[in-house]
Image 1 (cartoon, rainbow, N blue to C red):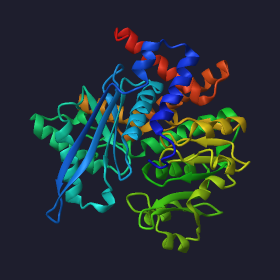
Image 2: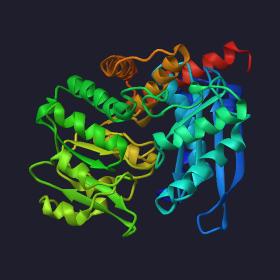
Image 3: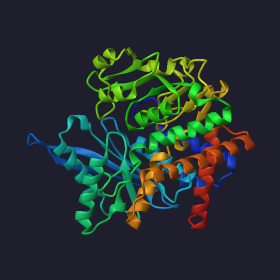
Image 4: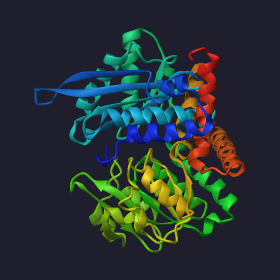
Length: 428
């Protein structure tokens, strides 16, 4: 979506093919796992506030459900593409597998810009999406969740439409719901906190004190905000944050040499993660071009926006001080940039391990909905920490033992688990 010169689906397949060859996966299993099992493309007509009718393109991709119901978010974005959703559905399969939860991979999207839609128009879009997919999603088939520019309110509208169609209560149909309506405590923080849980473990292995490190973040949405919060609580110092400004149609990097007051910054940030640049200046921030987030002299780079953000065109702009790249976004690094990062000896924590906290907590939400008993926030976050720590340690141990990159080690674990499931079911 972010860079048309790189096709995210081709990148996802390239990553899969490379590891499948390393582990000697048979051709039938390769063919089954390198593409989605099912795709749904449909149109959603919405009567707009001005009385006109606008037609929106919607998609739902179910990559693989051998290990359990498909799982993955629904994103609203004006530059959404079918290949982006295919790639994301594939990465969701590996993400669920690497943290060892009993779910498969799916993803959905609508080509739209919710920033230009009224609340009523957004509600009609959500309900229209569910009407198109009501027979093909559900607690035992495919469980959606929030993603880019969608939130708990959108999920509740979708749940209400699904329950209206099916004539019952099915809180496990969708996750990321409001607390009190079947949502889980800790879900809002889960992805961002999970990112920092694996960073904490990585820095332990590297012998680096977290409270002595500095970081630069790309993106300031939900994931980034909570990652910054926990990182700062553990003693880290964020020196730069980049975000896209829809009004100006460009990105800016906000730099503060002595670090940010997160509460003050979030107060001047809208619900889509856009920081008010005029008010940021009043807080003492330097306003730089958006791409300069990657050039900062920091220890840790955290791409937490969209895919294809670290490429051959900018990877050499990364400061020599950078020791860790923490992929909080999905697919932020292209294969050609990956090679340069490896050659430079930068420790990279791959996306589908780093940002698996969200889907892990979504799984917890499903479990709580199914048993109609909800856990306290501390219990949720404790379980999340345990899952993320265990997954990181398994990947790190394999990477060390087999002399693999962290990305390849994560893929080996994830692909092997899914391959065993499809073989065990007799699909191949």
